[in-house]
Length: 303
Length: 243
Image (tube, rainbow over all chains, first blue to last red; front, side):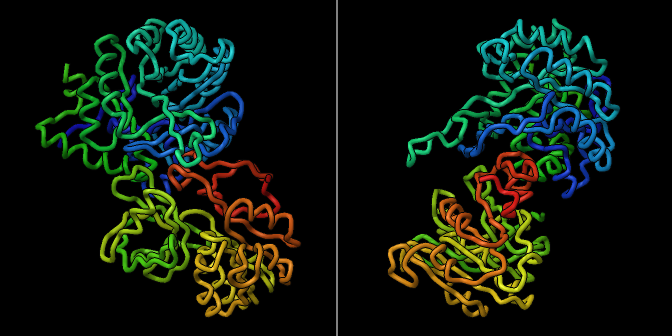
């Protein structure tokens, strides 16, 4: 038997596979297809203080080996997430879930995280710092070490659960951002969020997406994810959740060798709703082929 | 929703850009006319959502228009090839609201989902009128198929090369009906909205990510709250739509 259990910030999970926020909703659509309790956990739909409709449509553009989305954090707001979504989720998912929180000011991040922190179902809080900061000219929090530190400190001050900071790859130096998160008290780091991308419809001479630009994800971005996880692993001591274009069990192994303790699967869920189930089933076999008896021995194994 | 491999039984050109494909596989997940399937094609990242034209216990008929590289690739596929399909997606049409004399209005590539709907309504004993709108005679398909079901069929062409010259709404004004169902382009929807005198249901199109409600790529606002075209639609009721 191959061991696939890993310890993610104090909670043992059966395997390191975690559907990424925004590609798995609150789990119900997938629970219709298979028992989602096979997952390590999943990161639920990005939640903000207020309800958000998100961006105008079209929000989706296809790319070679990937896609661009500009959903714009559509969610019912933290109060409804707690009062409606989490009780519904409890009926189909009995493991601790990863909350995903976004905000447009430091105060909003703290407000939403404090409320989520009180939910028993939540095991970890993943804080997405890729949102524009309305108090700072719309610059993303995640592109400035000082802004990341502010968010982390404000969130840590009002929470007790492990805080994972989800980093944007759209930066000059990912290492300095990761170090800022760690020094401010983050318990873990997840990366990479989507790469900023764009497509133009050459017949209409117009951007495909209404919002013009969006987040590029899918298997095309996997090498960028491997590189950034590898770099950040060298620079910080806190655990890393790797993600970005993961589509199969071999990708999971590769990203863990780069330095990830657990791995999120994003766009693949949208193309193949059984992607995570297949990866979880394949993972022990792929590890066995490499004579790996315990998945923990490969974390950072490429360094 | 069901995912499986479906075998192409036939793939026939109906007009210059419209093809009819029959797929064999599990159809147990289909619960209403107007639902769609989402097809994975080799070499393309996202699936292609295509409305179900008709189905029985073991086959699905789809009719699609070649509009891009994905549908172009589909048009070149042969019988015997297999496709990875997500089946039984979306809400579909609600036939219980039709009353006795529903009218079905299909515009161009919006015609296909009207076919199985027509079949179901006739099975339910309804007196069904059908209006099929095209640009010109060469683009017409399925007129005879609808007639064989027993519907009263009117065809309109914009250039007057066949049937009634003008738009579907010109034929709608000449039709008595208790309720309407429609699928087609947005300008046609707006014309129907300005013309129709009863309640009805519209089947919408939107660029989708997943097709099964997970990604929020195809959301729209309605009077009943935010809806996902792929999961809570593609069919919306006239009363809830915000134009």
